[in-house]
Length: 141
Image (cartoon, rainbow, N blue to C red; front, side):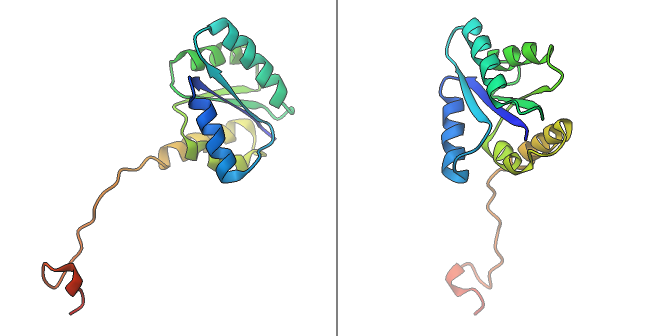
């Protein structure tokens, strides 16, 4: 099973984790690592988290912003670990959809996560209804 580390600025990772627990219950091999202000402390915490969730199927670090400190620190660690991937621009549907696909090969899992993240970004649009007249209470009359 692929391990998951959620990281990001401030309370972002805690909020994602709390939402995941609310929707999916307790989840194995998933931890969060917040970033407050010390990149060296973040690196140490990320390395510990990666070891904690690694079950020899690989680990994916989901970071809040591509190019932000949590993403950059995770990427530096990944540069030396063949079974670690990093995704920036994380959203809740991305992780939620992937929770049940963690037995895929690591690179397929990452492709799935990226696709789910993109597919679940939607804008609200009001669709115009066709009415017999302008009064919606008169539909079908």
